[in-house]
Image 1 (tube, rainbow, N blue to C red):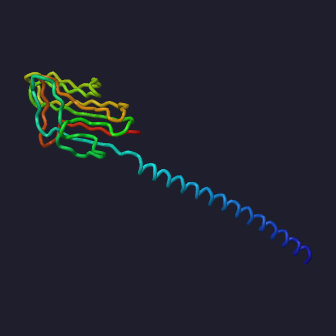
Image 2: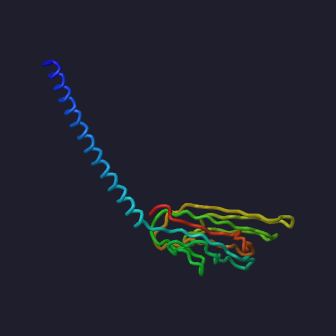
Length: 182
């Protein structure tokens, strides 16, 4: 009987040690969970404070040919989060410094030549060109570029003189941009 009692006492001690170890593990996990919750809340706060900039617009009408290069004004605005794109001037003005992505599409429906270029503050970045022939039908071309912009820098597209782009209610000719990171 004394041997059984001693064995039971040993088992009780082992279970006490196990319980203490389990409590320590639970406390560590609880502390880690609190840290994770704090990190999630901090990330949510940072995301709320991060600037949000994105726009997408289409011409909605055919432009050209003109006897001089013109800045294209995309009047049909699909979205303009941050209001950095002007449907009056056709110019995107960076509200914050950062890395931005721009993409544009130029559609041709006639035998007119098509050349649209994207500019950053007067400097040519990329171009879409199509040299149409009398037998040429519909053509669409697009280009895109990632640019580092300083606050206030401008990005826009220009139609080359004696060229034409087509657009209608189907929104073939578009200009899109968004902030990747500030």
